[in-house]
Amino acid sequence: MEILIRKNYDEMSKTAANLIVDQIKRNPKSVLGLATGSTPIGTYEELIRLHKSGNLDFSQIKSFNLDEYLGISIDLDKPYNEDQSYARFMWEELFKHINIKEKNYHVPNGLTDNPHQFCRNYEKQIKDAGGIDLQVLGIGGDGHVAFNEPGTSFSSRTHITALTQQTLDDNYELFYKKSGIPRDEMPHFAITMGIGTILDSRHTLLLASGERKAEVIAKAIEGPLTAQITSSSLQLHPKVTVVLDEEAASSLKRADHYKHVEIMKKKFSL
Image (tube, rainbow, N blue to C red; front, top):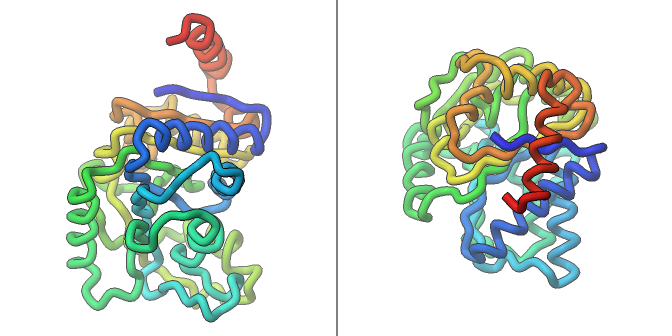
């Protein structure tokens, strides 16, 4: 697991964007796994900037998003602050600004008539695309990745999940409260890639910023493997890069070591 610690959110975002750019430069037909939430917005802004400057081409890229609320789907006729779907988030924050083809980006369908069959089909779509080359992840306040809540099996595949009260509270404050939607009207279930699906990716990129993520990041990186902190499953992945700002890294016991390792790798071109 490679830990990269940056001074602030902007530097964290640029570092993460550069890792995605490196993947695309190596393989212009890469399959990306994408995440929603406030953390990756700066990363997406940097990717958009590079695309508009003519230095980044998404025309052959395929992408699969981690998750979507069940019972909700994108409605482009609604203002952004009234449509809380993750599909709408991705459209506004990334897809409409780059040249990715509509047929090549995938977000779970929150309005599917058969959610369990949809989950099986989503897994097949990922497999048929050749698997995910680089999976972008955020981390929830209880340590979850995607919507894999505490107790989710490390072997789980794309599935339907009930959201915990902490996730509901966190997401209400971040996304729903500002739009005036009553708390009891937000979705309580979601479609999510499973831990097993995420661990199948060739490279995972975990992002976190802010002091409120510090404790759970320390548990994910330096704590024991446990299904109660589903992000700890990344310790089992052969290639993980974690990019943090100083605040998110503030509870790490070995932060100085991680910084030293990065310096030495650069010095010896490792």
